[in-house]
Image (cartoon, rainbow, N blue to C red):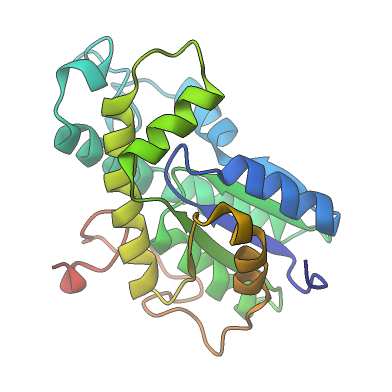
Length: 233
């Protein structure tokens, strides 16, 4: 890994693509520590109810099936996953703001990091004189993600439906990240992933990602995963 110049890395991507392993490797090689955004998500959801903040409880509110993947089509699960991610953008930005107050490098990784909030974080870092980087891992093959789930969660049973949602979500994240000028790294071939991720993190952006004012409110209209609605296909 090249010598670390950044102070904060945001590592996004769908579930099952290898973010946790990648984050641990980056942290181990640079002396940073890992913040799992899933922990923040769990805390925020624990502090709210479906009545108080329905956008955070699509999958555990009163109208949710016991296992959404079994009863909802992938399109519906994807729609709600994106809506949840967008509802969590203020929490993600809060984590970034907090990390920028301390001189300890960190890697924040999570499924619910949107390209929109990552672009804002990069610009916020620039505005405050701190080096913030963001990169998205991409795996668009549902069968590969299902195999990753099987290896990671051998007792989880058939997870093809969940993997299909993950593949679609990965494509959406990758497309939106590219529109914001954020690097997207394909997970395969695995043998070169570490080097390619290092290269993405070592790149020095010339300017703030597009559509990312340093400290402006989140855009009201999006196309899912935070890309400006005017850029929707």
